[in-house]
Image (cartoon, rainbow, N blue to C red):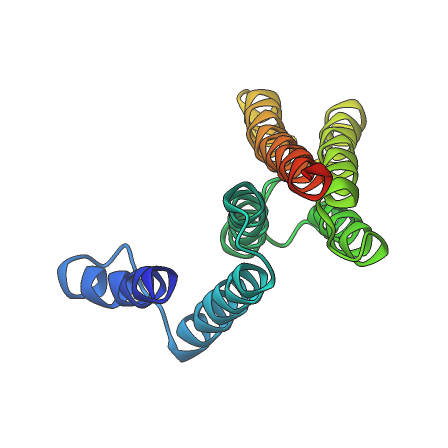
Length: 179
């Protein structure tokens, strides 16, 4: 229930903020998109938790879902490379594709998921390098730092998820090997 409660509170936050400031100005489409994203994230996490009782697997899946959610949200709201309208931000769709396709290929088993999320971290880093080398989204003196920090942040989340999946695989192996 906790993820669903958190999702409901997150959905209410902009509505409450709109009562106190003009800085937050959401319309029905904004709430619909955000609600759909929350529904997808919570639904995916709940499905994963029903698949296994392994705490490391659940944590790994949760970290991956949160990373994907934030990556999508940031790209839709303000964009990572320049503004949200910059087509270079579509490269982050490739990062998410690596995670999703890797998960499907691994059949969401922990050992394969560890590899898929490590590959996702590599794809994330690759997009950051492309953005820096090509000068994509170069708006202001701070843009290289923004790309570097966000690339590092997301890569760290993907690697944390990979590490947790690897731990889940070890726990699964040790449980299956026990006499």
